[in-house]
Length: 116
Length: 116
Image (cartoon, rainbow over all chains, first blue to last red; front, top):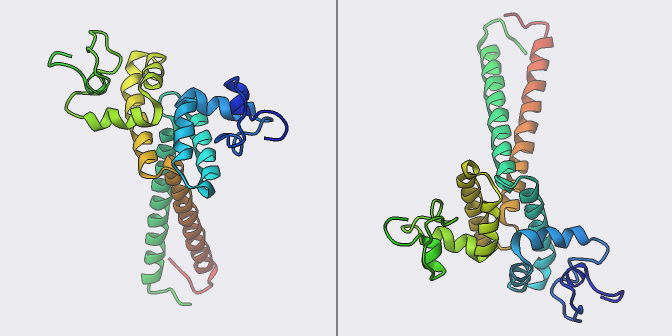
């Protein structure tokens, strides 16, 4: 971190080390990003989870952790699982519509008066 | 907990208090359930998150936390967000199929030879 500490080190009121595990993924101009993951996972767990991954996968993991943490802050009961349930309902509804529409086509196709 | 400690207190090697925040949701016969949430969120965060909710919502929250923790253990980069992305792809594909099928019906319907 050239310009001072990353948002994690600011939040944790510590010096930002050169090899800080957080700094590439928690820039100083976005303090809310770190405070979310800290609130839900704890900074030590976030650091551990990132550390266990190869460097090229850490940015994606940090993004997903932030997304999940924000979901849980917004919906403290269902978190991300609330979104997953909604999406399953949407898929179910789209599949039902598709089945109905295909059945409609099938009826049209067997209609003897039908000709291309 | 009548029969000894809940799985959280067993894991944390502590006495299970009568008002244990974990015991209704982490039975002693399912140690994996607690170890997952402990690994991802830390037991203290899990306890805090449950405590902040009205009692009737805690079971759902514990289930969702377990689901999310298992997702993250299975997929340490994308976690639940990986499932959400897959579901969005499925919805997109179902919607495309539906649009194509509706277009097909529209073509049939305008066909002058078509009669019910």
